[in-house]
Amino acid sequence: MGWLANRTTAIMTNAQPDIVLFMAGTNDFFWPVNDAHHGCRTTACLTARLRKLLDLTFAAVPKTTFLLSTITHINEARCKFYGTAHWHPGNCPSDMQANIIAYNKLLPAIAAEYVAKGFAMALHDVNAQAQFVDADYWVWGIHFNATGFQKMANVWANAIYSSAVWKGRAAAVCPCPARTPVPNCCAHKTDDQISSFRDVRLTVNFTVGSKPPPSAFSVIEPASKKALILNVSQPVYSGVSGTGPHGKGIEPEAHFAWVSDNLPFFESSDADLDRTYYFRTYSYHNHILNARYGCCSCDAAPPARPLLPPLPR
Image 1 (cartoon, rainbow, N blue to C red):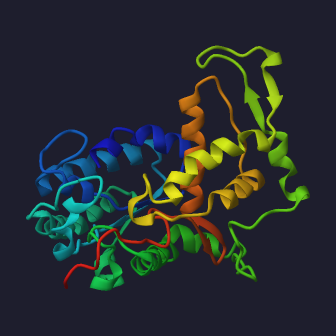
Image 2: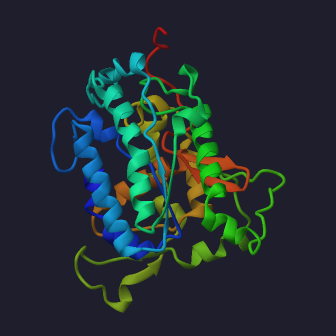
Image 3: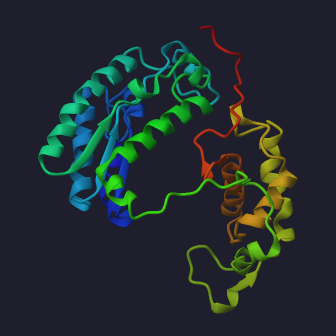
């Protein structure tokens, strides 16, 4: 939360949100030391960060509706094995759950404090409403699997629908109809649907950091980037590197076809920058989920495939 609070003014000023959805603090209590950007070992430290963020938010967008959630509880039994993750984060601190519970108990008073100042703010208890069970957690006990995230999403939806700003608009806004059949986010599009993408496939032939001359722009042909796209996605698909529990993602040839249909191509004088761009297209593609009203991008690439066998319960 410390890192985010330092950027709140810019984020809110640029976005001008009608509604802010906010849940934060898990990482603050995870890091074992206090510092300005990561760890926060006491509830007093974290509530101070929250107040700073709220003050900056309402200073930038005083009319916004701020919907605050309690922090989700961790699965302590699984979190004891977090250090076995391939990025070696370390296990969850022994006081992490207790800090989360204590912090959550302080939130009603903080929300009431800002409501008394005239700001639109509401708090909901995600743990009480979602009723998370062991099977809702991902293998290491901090994040959730699809069922856990669905419960969380349902709670957020209820918070939005219950807000005064949403109720005030409901009569004037047409309900979003369910799309039938459910859209396939990864399906190929017809040429007329993707013509706008083809129009913006430009290559920038100039040194990074300099201003390009008008003659520097030309159209990129998808075939010219196929080898690079396959090269950066194959190691991940093969499970050689990168994605850990969600290895064996989308087949590289299928990914190239999807990029050709959906994303702008890119080229610069920096080969590492080019590789990073096309690797991130593969990462993004693997994180897309079909949803009832369209598509969304999720935190953990579905379906999650744990590196480890299920932990004892």
